Image (cartoon, rainbow, N blue to C red; front, top):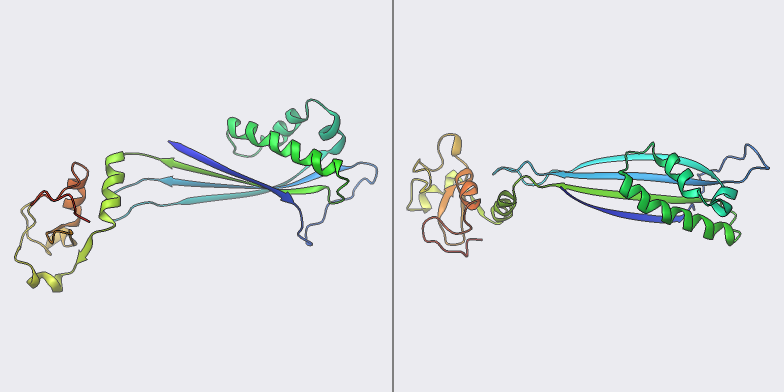
Amino acid sequence: MDSDISFIISPIEDPTFTIPKDDPFRKDFYINFHYIQVNFPLHLNASNSFSACRTTMNRIFSIPCDILCNCDDANTLLYNTFSSMPISPHILKQILLEIGKYAKEMIASNDDSWGMNAKLFVYTWYIEDEDAVKAVLAMDDLKKVGMDQSSCYSMDQCSICLEELFKGSKSECVMTECLHVFHKECIFQWFKRSLTCPLCRNDKIF
C-alpha cells in the first residue's frame, strides 16, 4: 500500500463563516478543517481499471490562543483535539506542526480573523498485482473490434484460447497495433505475463 498527502492552509475569507463570540474575554483560534481521503483500490480485470472512493469530513475546532502562543504542549492539545478525525498518527503529527506555526504567525501579526482553513488530502493506493497494473495500462490503448467488423479479419478464432471470436461469453474483442485480434479477457491475462503479441511477438502492441 502506498500513500501521499497534500496539506493546504489559508485564512478564512468566506463571509458566510462566522466565528462564535460566546465569551468576549476568551480568545479562541478557530480552525475550519477539511479532511478528504481518496482511496484507489485496484480491483483489476479486463473490463475496468482504477476506481476511486472519496470520503470527506469537515470539523470546526477552537483552540485557546494563549495556549497556541505560550504553551509548550500546544501540539499535545492539538493532537488530542484532532484525534477524533480518522487520520493516521504519523500524518497527524506532521500536519500539527504546520497548524501550530501558521496560527502563531496569524496571531503575532494581529490578524483579526482568528481563523484558518485547513485542507488535508490523503491519497492511498492498494496495489494487488503489479503485473495486472501493467496489463491494464496496455489494455487501455488497444482498439476495440466489433462483431460488424469480423469479416474484415482473416482470423476467426482467438489464438490464445482457440475459441471463436465474437461469440459466447468472450464476445468482446480487441486488436493490437500489429493488427491481430484476441478476446479482451484472453489478451489481458496474456499481458500479465508478457507485453508482446502472442502471434508475432511484436513488442509494439499499442
